[in-house]
Image (cartoon, rainbow, N blue to C red):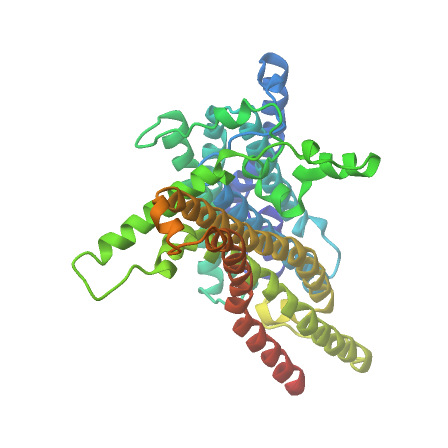
Length: 453
């Protein structure tokens, strides 16, 4: 929640007074966040003590449908709530004569509750108890209801002025809360009611005693920070690593699975050109059908990291302008047009820009790593699929073709080794080529912005 009891109290002191109905809304909003902040850990501790859920092997676990969307939405919601905290602090400093911590403490409470939902969701996946999602469903519904009440009050007070930051924060938070609600409903549909959903068989990977490649069975944050590989870093620090220490891969990374993926895509390409005698099957279309979705997603994630690289130079310029204004402006008494902080006022504050720059630097590295690793993985999968496909075709060649010189063993080896490796390298650099125009345009925009500043 981005706007709560303290915000209303600040409005009472500086803006139009609120009525008795508004006070009821404030109590409902504040109590909702406080109750769930306590209820989430209580439920986790109770289930751990009263059931055998905590005895579940948590080295790896199956991810629920919409896992990545859930984490991305929750992280973006946390950033939005962090803006709400900054807005409350800045409003208290600039609008109130005496410091009132209640202006920003409720926003901090809401941010902690949002982080607690991520912990609750993580434990729910580790224990594989999808019925725990009912509590999250109730939380999202009550929070959306409280946000709608707050939005109704803000619209009546500020007449839907998008320059008021708190109004924008409430609108964005309602959108993210609604996305979380839809993800929770989808989770209950698939894992609890099993409606129009076919469960995938992951048990064959879990039955392998030497399967340590948990990339597909950990949360998004662990994959971004490579936390699931801490056992390998610890082992490598203590002793020299051997191939046996790495274990085996999951079936998704096996040559058989990649061959089947490529074969299905190639059959669809042959169906497309059926009846067109002058057109040959396109390997590029086959690549896109087989790995295009994951490849573009990795490139998009990498572009987010590249976007974070643009923020520090712009923030430094704003910090210098803010410090210059504070240094030369001796008259600190300023009359504000609104009782709440505006968007331009918020993002021109030097302390806010310092926090934004710090977050951009922290977020940039994981997103660049996830994007780069995703591009490399798709290239490796494509190389594996091509090697398996060429090998399968070579087995179907007659001995007469090889003995007559139509196809030599060296040519087959060259196709399997050198050519597939070149295709992998091409796919690696193609992802960087996709985001290169965006990087160049961002650098030019920063240069023009600095010249104007």
